[in-house]
Image 1 (tube, rainbow over the protein chains, first blue to last red):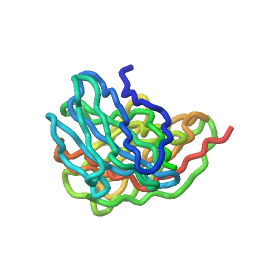
Image 2 (cartoon, rainbow over the protein chains, first blue to last red; image 1 turned 90 degrees about the vertical axis):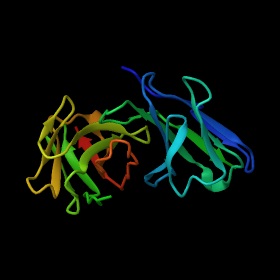
Image 3 (spheres, each protein chain N blue to C red; image 1 turned 180 degrees about the vertical axis):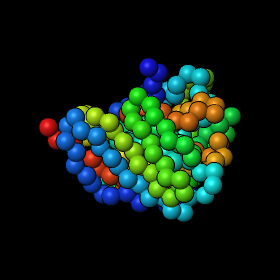
Image 4 (tube, chains in turn purple, blue; image 1 turned 120 degrees about the vertical axis):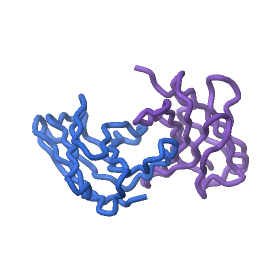
Amino acid sequence: EPEVTQTPSHQVTQMGQEVILRCVPISNHLYFYWYRQILGQKVEFLVSFYNNEISEKSEIFDDQFSVERPDGSNFTLKIRSTKLEDSAMYFCASRGTGAGELFFGEGSRLTVL
Amino acid sequence: DAKTTQPPSMDCAEGRAANLPCNHSTISGNEYVYWYRQIHSQGPQYIIHGLKNNETNEMASLIITEDRKSSTLILPHATLRDTAVYYCIVRPPNPNDYKLSFGAGTTVTVRA
């Protein structure tokens, strides 16, 4: 069964450092998403991406965040200068056209010290 | 988006059916009801969705009341691997609007 893959599974970084989280969506999907989940809290929408541009973003997704699809397969989330409160599990997701379901990856755990 | 209300937790015996209720009394005419689950902080997993009719797939059945103000997810034969947090989510009809709003969900514990 096709799946969304994410790397790294866990990243530890110092506050103020840049972090890039990588995702390989399912190959024929066109819509891409990032969600995050702070430990013990709800899963929160960050951003949606389609046709090489952001479709929608949440209030969380401020200027410190950016997304990119640098080639035909990867979809990345960059945090420019990490803060302690960015510590969370970050989930990438993708879906096809007209599809009813969103496929999530297993997540990348980010720990900011 | 319409808000959903779910019980915070429920237990279920292995092999028995698990019936998970969800209230979405403010749902509008064309909003879909989706169910996802999250097993121990893994990525959420799609289960099923519906609009007006009841739906069934290999994982579960979804029963939506006629007034669409509530629904029930049925896991027909719960196994230990079904222990997870189950989320009932209402999604707008716009196919390009997939900003899912996850609540606290129902923590389902399947016991042997």
